[in-house]
Length: 309
Image 1 (cartoon, rainbow, N blue to C red):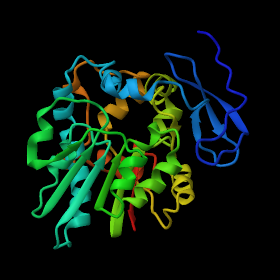
Image 2: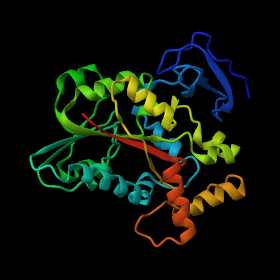
Image 3: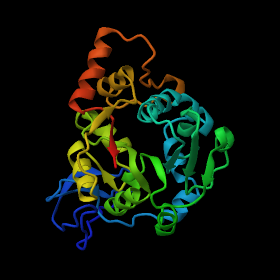
Image 4: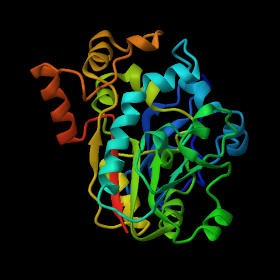
């Protein structure tokens, strides 16, 4: 593999500092190095424009990466991850449970709209902002309004102070300017509104335990930033989203963790064999402790915040 040298003009995506350490981590397909900012500690790819953003989303490259290690269709994957979607929906519904007036929700980068379809409450208007030109039945359920566009200046200008709930799941890590994005998110929020934001956790213990996992799964070209609880908090503060609490969310289950940890990285081709954590199945005491410890110590695979404007 050709060695890729970091760009000397590189500046941190969040704090714009030019000083960094080169980590012993890289994107497996390209050899692009992962850097860590010496000022804010954010881990990130070595330069901003590694891929053509417009082509990436219009050609639905995100899903092709997801299916690299499995032999499944898009619908099979969405259905298999339904428990993950339901757990997110419970968090959102807890936020809106006490609101009596009509609520306007937007899911920024919401894919097929399967999360919005799980949020069931009267007097809700739902917008789905998605740049990919996807064709799927999920859009037509529950009267979801599809906005086929990027989250750009024009959209922000036309939708200031509009939304009661803004959802942003696994989008921030793709962006070249996460601080500016969060500032713009704040502009479209009403007073007394809420933001639910979720990203992969780069303090996931499997990254340190299994190098094959980190090299083959965790670091991929479309993810420009790799947030830990510390660096996510820093990024939010830079954007003016203060007084947030980082919480944990575990997507993959105990057996999946054991397979990777004990077998030195083993991904199952059959999606039905991939163990997702489900709150409704009976867990033994070992699984229960494993799950609770990960949430408490924030070594789980996903972290999120709920910000109140």
